[in-house]
Image (cartoon, rainbow, N blue to C red):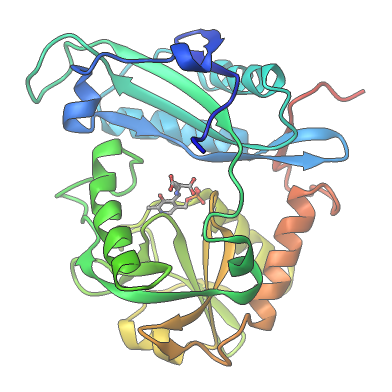
Amino acid sequence: MAMRADWIWMNGDLIPWDQANVHVFTHALHYGSSVFEGIRAYNTPKGPAIFRSHEHFRRLMDSAKIMRITPAPYTVEELIEAAKASIRANKQDSCYIRPLIYRGYESLGVDGRKCPVDVIIGTVPWGAYLGEEAINQGVDVAVSSWRRTPSGVGAPLGKIGGQYVNSQFIAMEAHDLGYDEAISLDIHGYVAEGSGENLFMVMDGVVYTPPLATSILSGITRDAVKTIAHDLGYEVKEMTITREMLYLADELFFTGTAAEVTPIRSVDRISVGSGTRGPITKAIQQRFFDITAGRYPDEHNWLDYVYDQE
Ligand code: PPE
């Protein structure tokens, strides 16, 4: 069934889902001139809470700046309020929030800056990205034959619609070959990330993740997981990672808003460690899910409640 909700926020108003349409000459549809976010709101004992709302909407503004959609038509605070209004209107306990800023309908031509800037925020149900089972059992991945779009060709730090053609190549190839997902390498052959997730590696008790300069998105879950790993007493390092390190790693896992923390149990059909979820992955997952469920104290102020707290 199609992903949907009753109401969607569009250009300042909450409107019925089925009325949120665009013209087929919308610039973004032809040229990928859009920027977006993916954010989760979690069900907690104090009602739905948006995970790291400010960081996500600030990154949306950063993407807009890279895409030369300036000035942004709304502030971070206005967009957070709009997302909350949509969650309330849809009576959602938890959801996936998809803000999208895009060049609308005016005329063709690659430089779309004559086209209007339109903004939507949809809040929709979305379960485990790589399947419920994947959270416990892990996923089987391959190293993609597609390289990640490098900086200077694209702008990997921007979450820009058109750049997700590269992600689609990576994901489609992986699925056609019978894998759940793939790990892309950057243009130099160093490990970058998944099609829609950042990557972490555990080796001899140390937690590693590739640096921003390896053509990755600056993931907000990546940042949260670095903090959690540190809180749990693990050493966390950014390190350039090579393909064969993936084969020798004790543990590997993906992080992302949609993927949350998902273990990787094999790469190129080679088992990662014991071939099951590793203990450090499990501990990090547990803390992540405890915080987002409101079961563990929100020490880093990551939860933004949708309803006013007494
Ligand atoms: N890298 C890429 C390329 C990416 O798209 C995402 C998010 C991440 C890393 C992780 O970033 P963060 O969510 O801030 O931890 N991918 C979004 C889109 C998924 C989709 O299929 O759409 C997401 O997870 O919401």
